[in-house]
Image 1 (cartoon, rainbow, N blue to C red):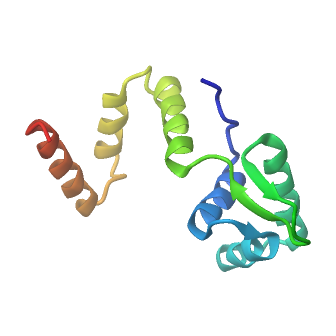
Image 2 (spheres, one colour; image 1 turned 90 degrees about the vertical axis):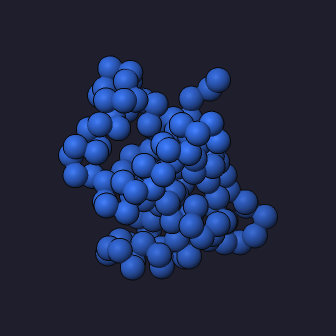
Image 3 (cartoon, helix red, strand yellow; image 1 turned 135 degrees about the vertical axis):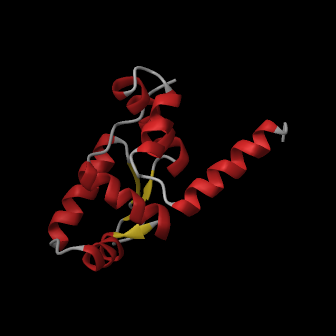
Length: 126
Protein backbone atom coordinates (compact mmCIF):
# COMPACT_ATOMS: atom_id res chain seq x y z
CA UNK A 1 0.00 0.00 0.00
CA UNK A 2 1.38 3.38 -0.96
CA UNK A 3 1.08 6.14 1.57
CA UNK A 4 -0.54 9.37 0.48
CA UNK A 5 1.25 12.64 1.17
CA UNK A 6 0.56 14.23 4.52
CA UNK A 7 -1.22 17.58 4.13
CA UNK A 8 -0.21 20.65 6.11
CA UNK A 9 -2.93 22.33 8.21
CA UNK A 10 -3.52 24.90 5.43
CA UNK A 11 -3.76 22.13 2.84
CA UNK A 12 -6.14 20.15 5.02
CA UNK A 13 -8.38 23.22 5.24
CA UNK A 14 -8.55 23.42 1.43
CA UNK A 15 -9.20 19.68 1.23
CA UNK A 16 -12.15 20.06 3.62
CA UNK A 17 -13.52 22.79 1.35
CA UNK A 18 -13.12 20.63 -1.76
CA UNK A 19 -14.65 17.57 -0.07
CA UNK A 20 -17.66 19.72 0.82
CA UNK A 21 -17.98 21.51 -2.55
CA UNK A 22 -16.83 18.83 -4.94
CA UNK A 23 -14.67 19.67 -7.97
CA UNK A 24 -14.11 23.43 -7.94
CA UNK A 25 -12.23 26.24 -9.63
CA UNK A 26 -9.67 28.35 -7.79
CA UNK A 27 -12.23 31.17 -7.68
CA UNK A 28 -14.80 28.92 -5.98
CA UNK A 29 -12.27 27.68 -3.42
CA UNK A 30 -11.07 31.25 -2.78
CA UNK A 31 -14.65 32.43 -2.15
CA UNK A 32 -15.09 29.69 0.47
CA UNK A 33 -11.75 30.49 2.13
CA UNK A 34 -12.78 34.15 2.43
CA UNK A 35 -15.78 33.08 4.56
CA UNK A 36 -13.30 31.84 7.19
CA UNK A 37 -10.29 34.14 6.84
CA UNK A 38 -8.60 36.69 4.62
CA UNK A 39 -6.36 35.03 2.04
CA UNK A 40 -5.25 36.37 -1.32
CA UNK A 41 -6.46 34.64 -4.48
CA UNK A 42 -2.84 34.13 -5.55
CA UNK A 43 -2.08 32.34 -2.26
CA UNK A 44 -5.01 29.95 -2.76
CA UNK A 45 -3.91 29.31 -6.35
CA UNK A 46 -0.32 28.62 -5.30
CA UNK A 47 -1.42 26.29 -2.50
CA UNK A 48 -3.69 24.34 -4.87
CA UNK A 49 -0.80 24.05 -7.35
CA UNK A 50 1.51 22.75 -4.60
CA UNK A 51 -1.14 20.27 -3.47
CA UNK A 52 -1.52 19.06 -7.06
CA UNK A 53 2.24 18.59 -7.28
CA UNK A 54 2.23 16.59 -4.03
CA UNK A 55 -0.51 14.31 -5.31
CA UNK A 56 -3.18 15.57 -2.92
CA UNK A 57 -5.32 16.99 -5.74
CA UNK A 58 -6.23 16.09 -9.30
CA UNK A 59 -6.63 18.92 -11.79
CA UNK A 60 -8.84 19.06 -14.86
CA UNK A 61 -7.05 21.26 -17.38
CA UNK A 62 -9.59 20.87 -20.20
CA UNK A 63 -11.21 24.21 -19.37
CA UNK A 64 -9.62 27.65 -18.99
CA UNK A 65 -10.31 27.78 -15.26
CA UNK A 66 -8.67 24.63 -13.97
CA UNK A 67 -10.91 22.52 -11.77
CA UNK A 68 -9.38 20.84 -8.71
CA UNK A 69 -10.66 17.83 -6.82
CA UNK A 70 -9.17 15.77 -3.99
CA UNK A 71 -7.09 12.81 -5.13
CA UNK A 72 -8.22 10.81 -2.08
CA UNK A 73 -11.58 10.26 -0.45
CA UNK A 74 -12.00 12.08 2.87
CA UNK A 75 -12.32 8.87 4.88
CA UNK A 76 -9.26 7.31 3.27
CA UNK A 77 -7.04 10.29 4.03
CA UNK A 78 -8.42 10.67 7.56
CA UNK A 79 -7.83 6.97 8.27
CA UNK A 80 -4.21 7.29 7.19
CA UNK A 81 -3.67 10.39 9.32
CA UNK A 82 -5.36 8.70 12.28
CA UNK A 83 -3.21 5.58 11.89
CA UNK A 84 -0.10 7.78 11.92
CA UNK A 85 -1.31 9.70 14.99
CA UNK A 86 -2.09 6.50 16.89
CA UNK A 87 1.33 5.10 16.05
CA UNK A 88 3.30 8.26 16.88
CA UNK A 89 1.42 9.73 19.83
CA UNK A 90 -0.26 6.71 21.44
CA UNK A 91 2.32 3.93 20.93
CA UNK A 92 -0.02 2.18 18.51
CA UNK A 93 -2.93 2.00 20.95
CA UNK A 94 -6.31 3.02 19.55
CA UNK A 95 -7.74 2.57 23.05
CA UNK A 96 -5.32 5.20 24.40
CA UNK A 97 -6.42 7.63 21.69
CA UNK A 98 -10.12 7.11 22.43
CA UNK A 99 -9.63 7.43 26.19
CA UNK A 100 -7.58 10.62 25.71
CA UNK A 101 -10.36 12.09 23.57
CA UNK A 102 -13.05 11.12 26.08
CA UNK A 103 -11.12 12.27 29.17
CA UNK A 104 -9.77 15.44 27.57
CA UNK A 105 -13.13 17.07 26.94
CA UNK A 106 -12.81 16.74 23.16
CA UNK A 107 -16.14 14.94 22.84
CA UNK A 108 -19.48 16.69 23.26
CA UNK A 109 -22.36 15.15 25.18
CA UNK A 110 -24.15 14.40 21.88
CA UNK A 111 -21.03 12.79 20.42
CA UNK A 112 -20.61 10.69 23.57
CA UNK A 113 -24.19 9.41 23.16
CA UNK A 114 -23.45 8.47 19.54
CA UNK A 115 -20.28 6.64 20.62
CA UNK A 116 -22.16 4.78 23.35
CA UNK A 117 -24.89 3.74 20.89
CA UNK A 118 -22.23 2.56 18.42
CA UNK A 119 -20.44 0.53 21.07
CA UNK A 120 -23.70 -0.99 22.25
CA UNK A 121 -24.68 -1.99 18.71
CA UNK A 122 -21.22 -3.49 18.13
CA UNK A 123 -21.60 -5.49 21.35
CA UNK A 124 -24.88 -6.88 20.04
CA UNK A 125 -23.04 -8.24 17.02
CA UNK A 126 -24.56 -5.78 14.56
